Length: 81
Image 1 (cartoon, rainbow, N blue to C red):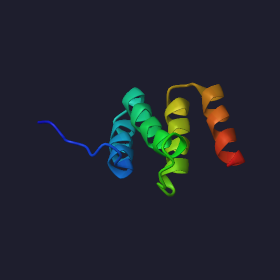
Image 2: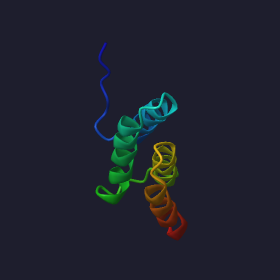
Image 3: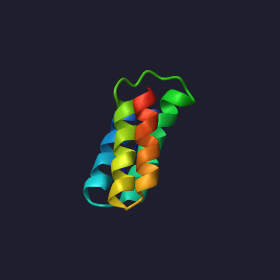
Image 4: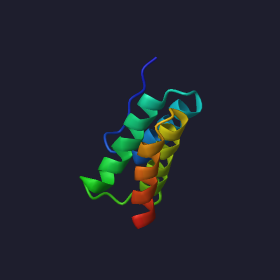
């Protein structure tokens, strides 16, 4: 079964990322979180708290993969925002 996504649907990508994170597929989770982040950074879309939430969740993915320095780096970026 295929799923059609709206091109700039931040909520759908965020929810898909959460599902991938919860089942331990961190690479695909990060891919979808990064898509959400780019909607704000590259396209200037107002996506509310999904921007920060996506960064925090990428940090969780890094931590769960044992990439502690990467997790710290993204958490520091979140803290600056």
